[in-house]
Image (spheres, rainbow, N blue to C red):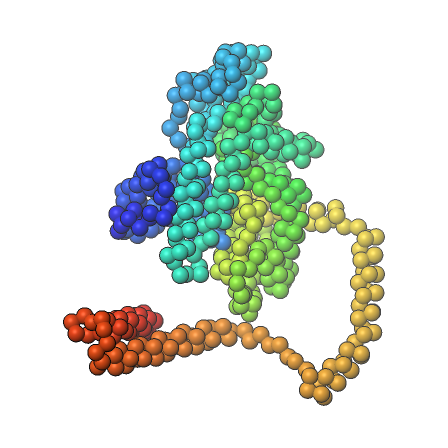
Length: 536
C-alpha cells in the first residue's frame, strides 16, 4: 500500500530532492507499520522520525484540540525538539560566519558541551571578552531551507488529499501548515525572539517577582541570540527550591497570578510554559525561551471572561454565546443540540466546588464542543488552550495546594473592577434607555403595519426548522439513486435497441455505441448497488 503511494504522488513531485524526501517519508511510515493502524503514540513516533518540520507540525497540532481528539493532542504535547548536538567546530564556524571575525574576538570562551540541542537551535554557555557570563543560542545551518522544502511538499500533499477525498470533514491542513510555518519562522528569527523578550519585560516591568533574561542586542542576529546566563533552579526541582528556603506554595500562587495577568491584562503570554522554561532566581520567577508567544485580541479576552462568568453563574445561554464567539462556524450549526450539549457540560459543574475545578479539563471540553460543531478557532485561542493546560499541569506537580482556576477567576474580577467606571456605565444606561424609549414609541405603528399586511395577504414568515437538514439530506440521496437507476435503465434499453441495428463501427458484430452504453449502465448499476450495500 505504501509502495503505491509513490506511484500516485507524481502531482506533488517536481524535482529529485522532493522525490528523495518523499521516499524517506514512506520509509519511516513503513518502518512504523502505519498500515497496521494508527495510535497516538505511533503518530508521535512517526513525527519524531520525520524530523524538525514534522516535530514542529506535531507541536502546533497539539494546540488544536478543535482538529484532533484530545488523546492525540495529549500525546503530541510530549513531542520534544531534542536533537543530536552539532559538533563544536560547526558552532564556531557559524559564529565566525555570522560575526565575520574570529570567535575569540567576541568570546573569551565557549563551553564545548551544549546546554541543550533542539531541532532548530543549540545552546551553549559562554563568557564575553568583558567577562560577562552569557548563553548563546545558535541556529542549525540550513534549517530554514529544510523546513521550507518540507512545507512545500506538505502543501502539495494536502492539495492532493483534497482532490482525492470527497469528505467535508477533512482537516484544513493548509491552515495548520500556515500556522506552523508562522510559528517556526518566529522561532528561527532570533531578532524576533529578542523583540518578544523586550516586550515581555516591558509589560511585566511593574511585577517585582517576575524577570526574564537580558538580551545583548549588539551581538544578536537572526541566527545567533546572546542573553545573560540565568543561574537558578528549575521550578520542578522541588528539593533544590526547598533547600534554598523558598516557599513553594507562595511561588505557585505568584506563578498563577502572573500567568493570568499575561492573559487577562496583557493579552500577550508565554505559549509553552513547561517547567524547563520557568526558573527561580533570587526568589523571582524567570521566564525563559520566549520564542513562541501567544496573543489574544480584546474580542478573545472578552469571550474567555464571558465563559468563566457564565460557568460561575451556571448560565447556559451565556456560555453558548461565549463558545460561539470563540471561533468561526464552518457550516450550519444545530443550535438546539449545541445548547443541549453545553447544558450537559454546565450540569457537570453545578454542584462542584469552584476551587476543585480544573481549568485544563474545562478548556479541553469546550475545545471538543468546538470540534464537534466544526467551529474554527484563531491561533491565539489554541495557544491559550495549550498554555492553560500546561501551566495547570505544572502547578499541579509543583504546588497542588494552589488552584489555578481560583486565581483565574480572581484575576477576571480584579480586571472587571479595574476597568469599571460608574460614570461610563451611567452614560451607557442613558443611551440604551433613550434607544429603548424610541423603539417603544414606534411599536404601535409597527403592529398596525403588520395587521394591514396580514389582512392584504402580504405577510411573509421565515421559518428555520431545526433538525430538518437530515431528512432533506436523506431525500436528496434517494432522488440521486432514483435518477441513477433511471439513467441506467435508459442506457440498457437504448443499447439493446442499437444492438438490433447494423450501425457501424462494430466489435464482434455489435455496434460500438451499444457496447459503450452497456458499459456505462454496468458502471452506474455497480455504483448504485455499492451505495445501497454501504448504507444499508
